[in-house]
Image 1 (cartoon, rainbow, N blue to C red):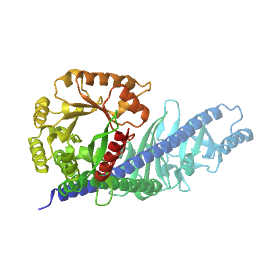
Image 2: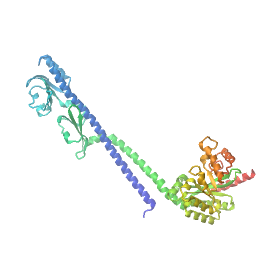
Image 3: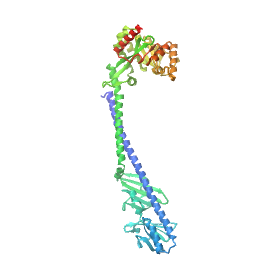
Image 4: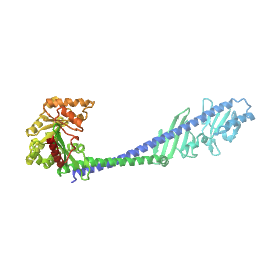
Length: 525
């Protein structure tokens, strides 16, 4: 059978593995999605430029033919042919310009002449009078299928390969369709699917390792662009992105593993180690002296738990105390502290009934019959009077525990005095405190720090003192760090204080010596 800790560790490891796989899957999906989007944008821009070039060439051809039809020179004269030649030279994609009279091509300029430019049947006849022959076997000259357009008495022969700028295409296979008919393809002889067989946008054909794209442009003419490339070329183009994402993935995986290990160390192993430390007597206790502000004599101390792990790491009470409460070990922790106090200072408490050690309780301690029973049993065994152990309860503990008054009365009936700790940081009010049998009110360090300042809290401490006095409670000021704070508190008739001004928390033997020194000093004065 696996232990609880082993099961927890296995759960964490499984979570770490799932997290890594999830991170890698998300990165892979993100890389693929972003690459596809980027490629679709790139091809969309390419299609737009090709469509604009094609539309411009067709519109320019129509305007040029209209211009030539309006020339006033004699047909086929040197002046006429010169005008045709000038128009052809300025348009690299125009291979020939000719003049017609009825059904006969009488003259022309360019690289191609004669019968090859008179195919038998037109592809399109427009209401404007424009006649067009799409590239095909009937318009092929020297292996090049030309796009022919005739308007009025003149015609143009256009090499569609030159309409598309080869510099834009690189290794891309592209086919350009106008009005549902193929006008040009790059490279020559490439076979691409017609637009009707493709969905708009980018399509990934994994079966054939191809990237296909179709873009329909909203131009004067219905123009479709079909592009095709190997999937390998697609990955090669986005390889830098792949490398960057891979590095990012490695960083995220490392960070995830670090977070899991940190969580495992501090949230899974710590509760188990704390349980072992409590059971094995590995906790230590230091004592924060409490003094009479008038005489300077030591009247007791607050017992503070300390924990150092086997590896030497010190875990602060702000970490292990809440952890003990969350893991159900709060009462065990409190009893462990009491056990150390009785072992270290039991003889001192027996010999000096006026000395009091304050023991901090949690809300679960206050409501736990097991705690009160163990408390009584341990004190009886150590022969220490209950009055020597004062129980400190925080405001939050009071509010989070039902039947607070009954629990406090039961503890006082055993002979313990009760102090409310960190007063002013919770939600207690005068009316609330009046219903509780308390002996001591401890003013939180926050208000002591504000003494003689203009902070809002500096005026609150006076009201707290007045409230405690009206309830006839002893007052202990926490966190006194300067002589002027101690003097101000004495003037306000605060009886007791604790803080670094008097002493830092001390080990048991150091506390004994300190108490003796303070008593001796007070006797001399």
